[in-house]
Image (cartoon, rainbow, N blue to C red):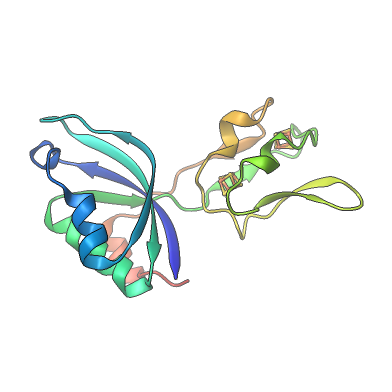
Length: 150
Ligand code: SF4
Ligand code: SF4
């Protein structure tokens, strides 16, 4: 199984098409919409988490491409500024994959970049903005070469 987060940019001609519905139906890919800004006859942007078998996710991305949808993978380009972090723990409750957690018995707040999916949910919740995002864009062309490896 692969779980990846993508920024999808929909051309305005496709803004009213049920593309995501078909993606789920035809490719057996689970999805979770993290953010969406799509209006009829306007270019739309959606941040989508896709989960499924690697080949299905790849096929689903090809399907999106056939509609002119551009996908950029939000890779795990999140880092923590340890100078700013004061170990309050506020971020640990929101991280969906346990990449931020409290280590016991020291009660240290640990950030594990290996687990981080780059969803950015922890960024606004940190009172001192210690979690920093640098989105990594991977175009379809690059994606095709690389494919999904985990
Ligand atoms: S971006 Fe933050 S909330 Fe999202 S997976 Fe990474 S550490 Fe967790
Ligand atoms: S919310 Fe910010 S300051 Fe608090 S533990 Fe997380 S990264 Fe550190």
